[in-house]
Image (cartoon, rainbow over all chains, first blue to last red; front, side):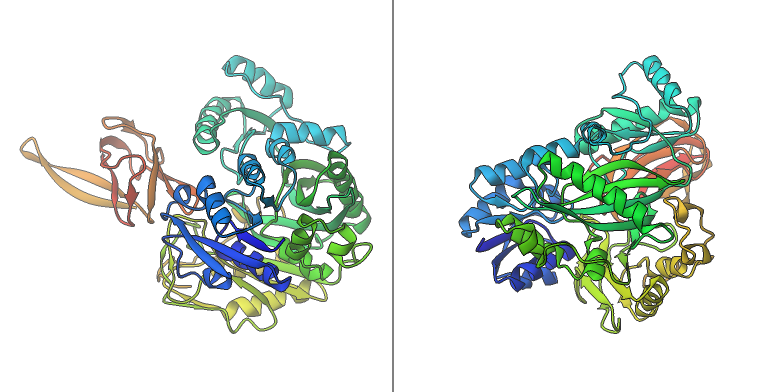
Length: 456
Length: 86
């Protein structure tokens, strides 16, 4: 691997470019017409504009991206997270062009990206799943029967896609029909596949996921868990490791089981197995066949640079070479990551605008990964993540307290940010006690903050 | 979300309620139709902004008199998305 194209933008692109630079690989950044002045663009050896601001014209323009990679003399492509990162068609095209795709085999991206197929595959390796239906028929009466067999309350899910799109909870029979119609429309529009299934709805689940890493020679290991229960609109806001208040043996047991399952399937590269946890039981949610936004907390407690390890594995290194040691280290201390979103902190509505000030320089002792700088414009075309702030402490309390002090020192003007909401959560006694669950944000009492000024 | 407008019609004056965009984005899907009777809280259309779908709800009960936007159209904060006659 000599020259890598990073098919992404913002925080993700910056992170990958930094890792590539540290192992002395030349890099190519791509950007849309709207992103030419973002910090990541100048971090690469070369940068090319690939199209208009809409993702369809730029970061999702598969053929154009591959053309740029070929013309620039790249030998590899890293898809980052989001955009084309879990698109099997793109991985296949990259590989067909003779380029190395930094990710798992194409057939596994395909299989594991389909929630129904992924679930069936995992069941085969003894990974627990929650009661769920087969793919629902279009006939509503038959769908009613299948739903009744699962029992209410339940959740309607599209078999394709992710990000919580088209996932709707249903309290009883009367709510099922409208939920199916809505979910099918959303799924068809977002993923081009309107097929749905229903799953039993857990009452107070935690989101716990396991980081897996595997090389091309059959070696596989896990790098512990992350608790990502603090979410809004089914998207994570705070992530931490270790998961609070759970036994290490229980967590490591499940981590080994899912790592073994992916290993048996012939998995390679980084992967994350997402699960729900309630009352002592795990149930499988989905596999993300890519680097994840929250990889940083795992890096903090293990001391392993996951992106560098991912690049080395893609280039053919063994797991041991990629980790720099024969077995993964024990986790040390506690790490918490906050995603800074460009949105109002009360209703989480997107906030676009010109960044008159974007200053994280006073975040002492914290790791900051920013996608923007002062003078950039936040548009409505891309996801709202402006930056990630990561704290590492000897224990959970210390990590949280570092994060609180750091976030208080952030200055952003020109858009609203979710920092006031994050601070409120970090100081919430239930959160501090580690009693987290996925509907925590919906149910937590909120301070009456008027969404007044357009600043953080 | 609601703004009030006065519309002269039938020689009299009728109140109209404007439903406006709370943030910049684009129209993802128009769910309601002109002439449709709606109840406060009903979904009128869905905006897309920063990869999120944000439903726009009727701010009052009444009849949808106008939906002056098309799917895919970019809208700024404050843009009128629907006009309801209470």
